[in-house]
Amino acid sequence: MTESAAQLLILSAPSGAGKTSLARALVEQLANTVMSISHTTREQRDGEKEGLDYYFVDDDKFAKMVESGGFLEHAEVYSYRYGTGKQAVQKQLERGNNVLLDIDWQGGQQIRSVLPDVLSVSILPPSVEELEQRLRSRAQDSEETIQRRMSLALAEMRHCYEADFIVLNDDFESALDDLKKILQSQPEQIRPLMIDLQALLK
Image 1 (cartoon, rainbow, N blue to C red):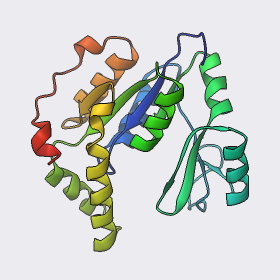
Image 2 (image 1 turned 120 degrees about the vertical axis):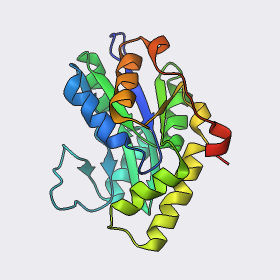
Image 3 (image 1 turned 60 degrees about the vertical axis):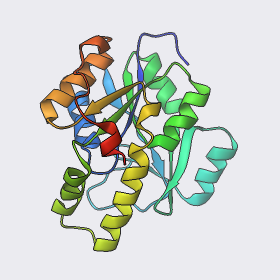
């Protein structure tokens, strides 16, 4: 996609695994590292800023971008559509910036099909029980919503083997250090995965 040394890195994780917090910390602590800003058809929430949190578009504009090949990937989540703009990512890479993509396994598959050299990381919680506890601690979702999120989270985790690396977010600073080493081309220094994945993903 570009001849610069900048890296495009896919970060995938189930809801509640801490992916967003880790991505924000990477952007704050590593020079020349930015988050990709997605397009979405959902309504703008209080406190969100256009062009900072998302690009908010209507269904018609989103559909036109799909038809014109304007997205690296796009998907429907909770009845809303989300997509990663191809042109915006290209510009950041050409500027020498690492670009982090906060997307699910479906988006990861779409991007790897057109950009096989892209790096990808699956971030996992230490256990399913811990994941559910994190979701419940938010105290902002109904029981039905929590169960739906848990179902989607388990589906996401079962695709963790598709990623180049798996990082366990059992300790925030350790997980952050692992991600830094991956971005800094030192993946051999990340922690070994001391967890029974079969038990976690059963």
